[in-house]
Length: 273
Length: 295
Image (cartoon, rainbow over all chains, first blue to last red; front, side, top):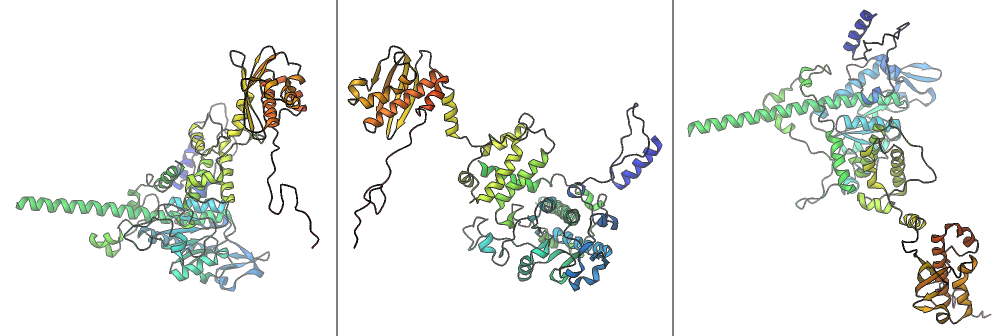
C-alpha cells in the first residue's frame, strides 16, 4: 500500500496535484479506492493554470464549449462553431485554446512593456470576484461596476478629478488603458466603441451571438459560465504576471549594470587622478 | 482617520503580490515553463532603459471605476470576509442591530459623496463582518470600530434607566413641558415642596397649578413621604407646573421602579410634546382664518 502511495505521490508532485499523507493512524484500515481531491471549487479562482498547463479537457469541464441557441447566432462566428446539439451551438475548443494562447501572448508582451491592463466584467457576483482576483494577481486594474461612457473619450471630465493637478500642468494627469480585457462584451458595446476611438486594443470572450470582428483579439468561448470566465481571466492574468516578473527582472538587471558601469568610471577617473 | 487607512490599504493591495514574486523563475522557466528570449532591441542596455523606465500607473486598482476609494473599500471588506469565512460567528440579533456611522458622516470621513445604495452596500458588508466572534478576531473588530456609531439618545436612555438615588438618598431628574424646564431633587422626608426656594403655595397662586405639581405624589400615596426641591426656568405658569410634575415622576421611578406602570397609565411618564403650533401663511394664526368675503 505504501509503495502504491509513494508512486501516486511522486506522480502528483510532477503534476502539481495534491499529495496524500503517508502516515495514516494504525486503527484506520485503508480499503477500497484512495480518496484524492482532484478539484475544489475555488481552485481556478485562487490558483489558475498557466497557458501551458491548459488542456482541452479543462476547457470542457469549465463549460466553455456551450454557445447560445442556434436561432440567436451571429454568422460571423461560424468558423468557431463545432456543430449544433439540442438546438445549441457548440464552440470548437481547439480554436478556443489557440485564440486564448494568442491573447495570453498579447497580455504578456503588453505587461512586459509596462502597459496598463483593464479587466472588465459587469455581471457581478462570481464574475466580479474572478476579475478582481485577476487584476490583483498581475497588479493591473479592474472594473466590475458599470462602465462610465466617456472614460476614454471624455477622460478629463470622468477621471480628471482623481489625481491632484500639479501647478506646472494645465490639465490634471489622466490614464488610458493600454489593453482592455472584456469578459462580457455583449453587454459592453460602449466599451468597444470607445476603445476604437481611443486606439486601445481589446481582448474579448466572444460567444456565438457576438460578432468577433468587433474585438482585436477574440476568444471564442462561453461567456455565461462562471467557472469558464474564472479560468480565462485567471490564465490571462497569469500571463500578465509572467510579463511583469520578467519586466522586474530586466529592470533589476539593468539597474545593477548601471551601478557597475558607474563604479568602473569612478575607478578609471580616480586612477588617472 | 478612515481616509488615511484607505490610502494605506490601496497601496497594500498593489504591493501584496510583489513580496511573493520569485524573479529568478522567469529566466530559468521552472514554474511556468516559459522563458522570454531577449528581443534584439535589448542587445544594448541603454536602448532598453527607455522601455523599462518605471511606468506611471494609477495608484488604485479601481481607478477606472472613477470611484477608487469606494470600490477599494468594498474590495477590502470582501477580502476580510473571505479571510474570516471559517471563523466562528454569532447569531445575528435582529432586534439590536449594530449602529454604523451615518451616510453623511461616512461620506465626509472617506472624502466621497456616498449615495444611499453605496452606503447600503458598505453597511451590508460591515454587518457580515460584525457577526464574527470578537474574541477570535480582535484586529477585525478594531477595524470595524472605525465605522461604529454611538447612539447618544439610546445611551442617555440606558443611563437614565440605570440611575439610583445617591448615598444621601437624593435623586435628580429633569422635567420639561412646553418651553419650561425644571431640575427636581427628591429625598425621603415630610412632604415639603420648594420651587425656586419658595414653597408651592407661594409660587403657584392658582390651585390648578398646585394640583398638577402634586398629582404624581398623590397618585402614589406618597405626599408625606418625600421632600421636593425644584428649580424651574422658562415657559409660563402651567408649563412650569407640568415640567415640575414630569420631574417628580422621573424621580419617583428612580426611587421605586415598580411605580412606573401606574404612573404611565396616568400619562405622567411621557414628556408631553404638545407645544405652540406655528403660524401659517394665509392664516391669521395657526388655525384662525381671515374673514371669508363673498366678493
